[in-house]
Image 1: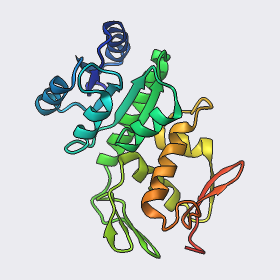
Image 2 (image 1 turned 180 degrees about the vertical axis):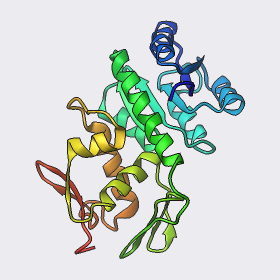
Image 3 (image 1 turned 45 degrees about the horizontal axis):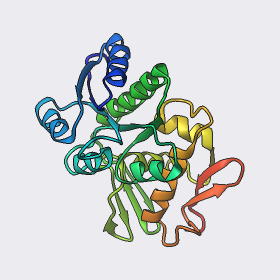
Image 4 (image 1 turned 90 degrees about the horizontal axis):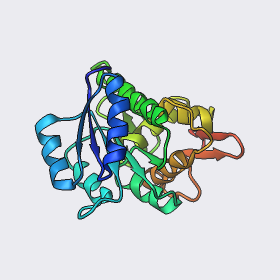
Length: 233
């Protein structure tokens, strides 16, 4: 994995240098900027494999940067922010972020998250070019193209929403514990904070369920986790 490019977009020099130090030790090439326009230039010129993005930036904030990046790029985006309120996390993940860490954070934990996202990206890119399709009543999932059709209509999902749907749909009618699902999707332990997972599940339901408050496909098994239901869908 060493040698992959990671773009940091943050206006706090101390944070940037700390992240750069830890990622460079792991063999990553680190790029850094403190504003949106420059971030777009870096993306076009260097095509980084992942973006670490602060939400609170002068001028164009991280939310708008992420929204614009998602129009052209599908690399993992990890938000870092001093904001820990659920609404901020929900917003960041809803507009295309893959993960969210609250400042101050453990640099080693951030490195672990980066490795997990890049490892998963690499695995996805190495998928066989055979057509892989999962079909359910009113729902089609193409594992190769990562496209989803709900009642015949192409329905855009974020990268992490698709990952979660595919993980659950591959295990129909089987309960997947929350911690296990988190580790399968992110490649690391949740350390007890599964809000990111809950937000993605909520967003996913809004896109594929006829009634998100009474989901037919992604059902909650209270106190345990989730299961992809195919008997009553």
